[in-house]
Amino acid sequence: MEKGIYLITGFPGFLSQNIVGELLKQEKASKVYLLHLHSMRKQAEEGMRKLRFLSDAEIILIEGDITQTNLDMAEEEIVEIREEVEYVWHLAAIYDLAVPQDLAQKVNVEGTRQVNDFCQTLRRLKRYVYFSTAFIAGSREGELMENELIRPERFHNFYERTKYEAEVLVDEWKDKLPITIIRPGIVKGNSETGETVKFDGPYFIMNMFNRLSFLPWIPFLGEGTSYINIVPVEYVVKASIYLGHEEAGNGKTYHLTDPEPLMVREVYEQILWHMLKKKPKGRIPLSLSNWALGFRFIRRYLKVEREALDYFTLQGKFNCEHAQRDLEGTSILCPSLSSQIEKMVEFYVEHASNERLHVKID
Image (cartoon, rainbow, N blue to C red; front, top):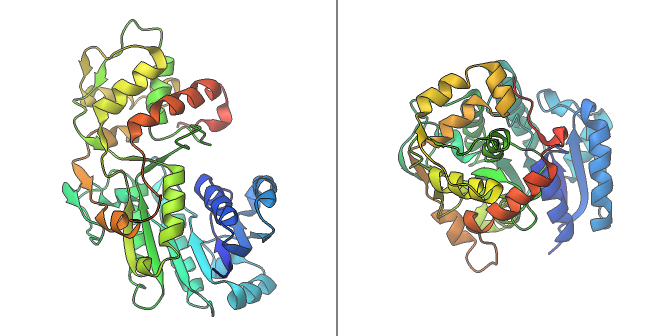
């Protein structure tokens, strides 16, 4: 396969670093432009240094801002990228369940609108890969299909709402641009090493267990009978790279989700056992948990975002048949979550004192 030229937004985020690294390992890129905010220059340089030894591809850091016209890049960079770039991977977004409305709207929606506009000016564009989220489904229930883009009656937070609105903007261009939309589940660290760069999502449960480890027992939160869809980063990375280059992926939307998700109570039990060798005892209603997390000092002590509780009661189940079918014949499979929890806990326990990995709780 001929090597391509890429523009990737959202560097040096967790997903973008992993995707660039895998593109380089697979020898898919001859040149990669990495768009980053001016305020992230130091982190971007550090991230680039880690990538350089993976390939002889040219890696270029570009300062910019997706919320501005032409992504706020310098004029000479705009001209060069318009002439050269064949693949755009749009990963820049605010990935925070507690994000305020104005910031989410500006980055997730208006930023995506600007990326869409810029993609229309690229002369050699072969694929525009947009990273959405499976949770644009909001409060929808039942089986949720990949080819559906239905506004739910309710979103749980501004992250979900603005990612839905952004996906609508991208989806509208499917008949004019070569687009692949990726909807991951909750992305966790590497399945084999447990490594991650941020303790959010399922790691909030570990934060709580860590703080409450002195208790003789720890109760369940709610019934825990809803399914929670958690996927390892390397599955999302490898699957999206494959689908983002295959012709079969052109014009499609994929759920990169666990085809056999666990119930919340199963995840809760397994994490508690691997962390503290305890089994849950008793039950606290979610309404009481939600009330308690309404107090800032409790949220900060437990290191848990209140919005995370919404994912204990989701009634939707993500159908990922299109992704599974188009990945058939490859070695790209989503491993069972049960097989990953021990490594996940080991990494957390080893790095729990590293404040850089913890989400700032307000």
